Length: 541
Image (cartoon, rainbow, N blue to C red; front, side):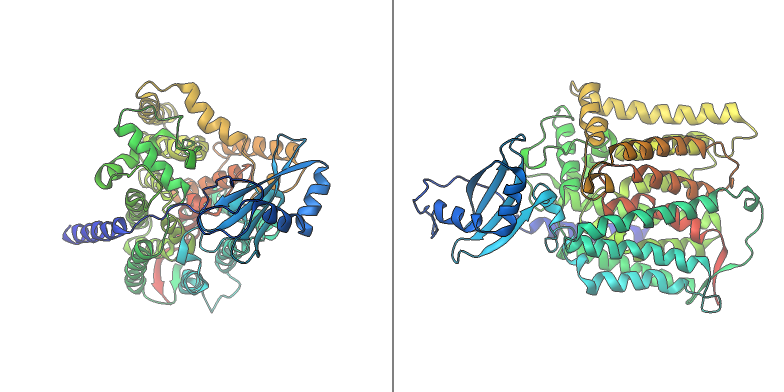
């Protein structure tokens, strides 16, 4: 208990240091120049006409304008002594078709964007935009190696676990292309990776004969489990330091702080979010409720600054995942398995990515792990999986597979208790959503309706034209799949439950119009339980 208190105190000190960092003014604020041939005040050198002339000459701009047929243009000033020239399709709701960034001092073209990279700035490959230093190869690559290395069995090189781990690290390759702005490579690469993990989880989960059969052999490790525990403590300290010294808060964490502030100040939760995060109310109501303690402790200045409350929330959600995975591993195979699962979580680069972006994605992961820990209690897992679903919403798809877990002997009792737990979570969520005169309509419009209409170039449906029907089919199949696996003969233990839960989440993600690499965090703990928990107690070879 003393160790936990010391760790929490260290966390608070680190977050206080993060709070002391000053927030920088946004470099994206735009103003209109005074006149076409007048040099703006503030040390500018170019006129609006000169900036337009520079941009008009670019081949990419000419091609975009020719494709549009008829276009208009506007020039804007940026606070870093840059010009932004934007081109609009005059026939299609003035949608922006090209954008040029020009250095005022030299007249050099710094950036030129067309197609989907105009509205989607996150597709441009800006250095460190998501998580700052975690994106350095000198940080990411060693983490990926540490994630795989302890589980390599040199005596059985063709073991399926090796391929599984290789595929999981393959998401790092896709993310590397994303960081370079190569979305045409990154997006197509993620789909087969997701399909592979989905297939493997089905293979593990739909094998009822494995439920009562003891593991054939222990999980082989290259080093003793105790060493993994020491490494896990070091990696936890490393990610804490990285969070304090070189991380940022993306819109996801900012949204949680805004919503928490609304709840604490008696304002309706949904609707009227700030202009710099206008769609930040798209998450489930419990997400914002669980941010309230952090916002109350660390406060919020009212703007997108360093947001220490978001830092605190992300780190605590991560620590919850660590503690719950340790407990789940102990329940499965003993202390060594608990240590192994914790090590795999902290070594996997995308979990550090989640903390370094200070996102909320570890929160539904923690609640889903908690539901696995409480799997033997229908009411307990009903509350927890309901809470998970009412934070990020996709986890609602896990309700059927959790509801029917080991229900063969007492079906009515199991469903009733699970339903009561789910009802408690729902009442808590609706009370939060409707607090301070909110409405169900606002909740629906901001969450499910908004997400249903959201398309991004990070999915095949947004990157390529003409796939609307295919996407609809995939979405319908994903929902049907989530229901069907709940009633198929399956492995009736926590390993099987984790595997099928991961499969359902991935199936639903495949149909999303918006997908991002943070979503890997939703299912990676389930995959780790399914892959590593199948074997016996880990031991040194």
